[in-house]
Image (cartoon, rainbow, N blue to C red; front, side, top):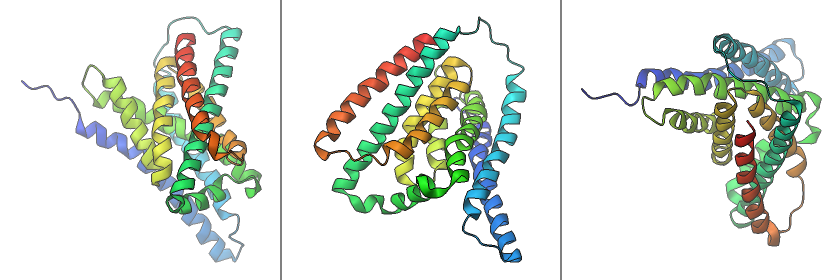
Length: 261
């Protein structure tokens, strides 16, 4: 009798989570633009408002599914003392800034040698990660989006995909598959390339800690730091040095976080 290593039915169900999230975003946006058309209102801020509403809906929907299932699982062991929690937070802060700095440096290298690859990406970043986009957009990007995406991907998707892989390394396969879905969810090649590694790190945090809180904190740090680090002028001569240093910092932080958790 041949053991089935992958449950395709469960894997398809797992893929419905990011698809549902995208549908929520699109439906809310289309509804918002339709209301503006019918009422003759200005559509300048409709993107920010509908994005905020759609992420709130995602938090409510995926948060409900995650928390209702998570409450059935009892975690043994004592809670982390305050000092340990503080140390983990500092490590997450260093990790988030290092990841964002690494991503920025790699994008600067691409922009130097193949700028045509980033034309549409720069337009997307300007819409989402500009400090001039208003408080609603900033709060959505730095707070609502990380919480919603962690509930959807490291909460619901990761748990569903673990049950879809019947192998000794089911958890690792689930982390990689969830990271792949997370990259596809962003909808463009550039963001896919750095969302997948970030998704792997966030998945590891969720598995190690048995909680979404460390991942949410790291995700918030990543998105918030993009407003600052993305605008820093970095000399091309030191880009490779910064990439090397940040890679070392990321590995050290991940090892220390795993030991601390």
